Image (cartoon, one colour):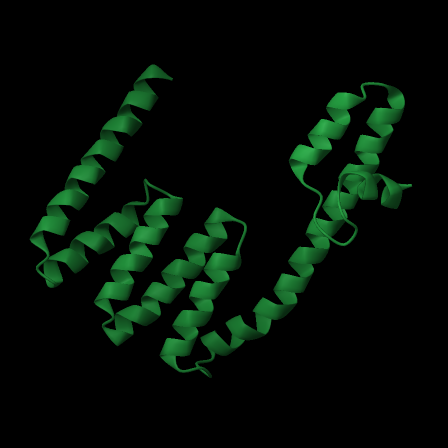
Length: 168
């Protein structure tokens, strides 16, 4: 029954979209529709769990080799960057990017570091560590215009946050 429900709104073996699930449920408000929704939700949860296990099986050996320094620094950086791109969770993506930045710091890869911290700020626009690291990098590389823009951006973020806090 769950397989049939999944086939109605998504292809077997592929993720069932939340939008499709909501459309299916909105179309049918009766008990059968609710039961279908529960079955479909079970399929979605099972698919997510299976995907996480597959990713974890691929990721764990890579992370272990990174931590044991079995890979050259540049390959470690690329692997961590790939892990960040593939992760669905923002906190995990930020963690992978910070680990990648630690390696880049050893390589004196300033341009890549700047790009990495910018990527972190795209995920979390209030990440203080990323702002501080970028400020430090812009001072080292004497990119004064970029530093001024960054400080202005940071001021805007702080004022947005204070406005949200005072109105909420």
